[in-house]
Length: 571
Image (cartoon, rainbow, N blue to C red; front, top):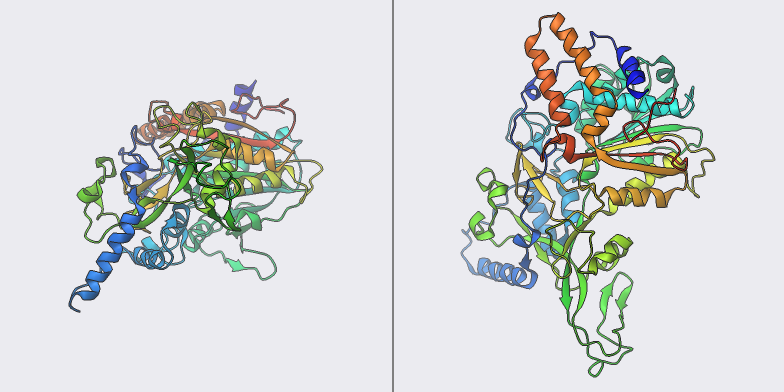
């Protein structure tokens, strides 16, 4: 049933509709790419970056004193980027900062963030983040078939939810160049009833440069983009059916309307959300004989000193989470002195400006974030199965937690299923999340990466010019989503290859290949087949296996599974 219906739907797309991914991005490198490849089989543990915090502080103090005593002609330390200098000045004033703060500044900071102007202001000509000439290649840039199948997935959800004749919203979070949304909209035009039901397209994008790129693709270069004084965001008109297109910087800016049917896409968005990193350490307990039971040593929290009580008679060490913080590397550091691993290609960047240091005492994040979920609390057990095989358990265990993942997941769930604050009597809509990370429920560890020109580099080298990313915790998304709204349920994650083939991708590729052969375009036919094979490759590092898909749909007690997740097309 599914294959036949999907095949008929695909046949409704004109055979002449074959997009050429021409330009610099058409020749895709085969080197490991941050957003088109499996993570390396072995990543250096955070401990390879970790330095003792007090030692680093002492070195910095000694270097400063030495500098003050030197002659005035001694040059000040040269930082690799303007953002690196700004970060170093902030850290010198406040002390080491959380990894999440460092990532946020590097990716979306007002001055020289990776997505907010650093590359455009660099000396590297004709370079952006995307394509063979950039740092990474995404699935929509590899083949038009990816976006077409994603668009078709939303068509199947629209059908399953009663084919609403109005109130449909298409929402993409982190839309890149806009290629994916363009392919989805073009595909949906072949289903006129759904196309007419679309009230608006929302693009959640923080980068002014990318907003302009998206507007040019979706609306045309001559289209006007205006900033609304009455509504949040920027507005223009789509070239497909004069649909309003609205740009916002946050998903929270999208209005909650119980009569709307939001179809939400998050492709390679969650991997760029800032993370906090924590290491489990042994700390000595206070013997009852030396410290009164009601007044043990306190820890500083956001609300003041916290007075934990030690169990009577406890004398052995206890386990406690400590945060890994970012601080500058010592002046004069080299790749050798910092032990930059070969997997980080030290020949491609100058020595890292920063490093991770272990906080000597609890921080407000280490006291709070690992207590958010039973999954994290269970990690203090040395027998916990929540960590990937081969990683330290108990003392020495390192985990990554993204608070922003919880916030965004909550917003997605509320838009679809409603909440006590935003009631939605009849949940409607759907979300499709595609990203990479463990699909077995384990907590990501040691996954922070930097990417330059399709190669892994140190995430602490050249801030603002290096893309940063970490594995996505799909279990955390599912947990946050179902906790936020009783009106949704979650399916997956499933491998990307499974999803795309379940949507009839093979048939679509065969259809396009036949059309190309009829035109004598042998090379284009071969490129099309290679691109498809790359998207569904289930080898150890293949995109079809490494990338996972998660679906969020209205709660129906599991009676209907989405297409690609074990379900069938509902006509």
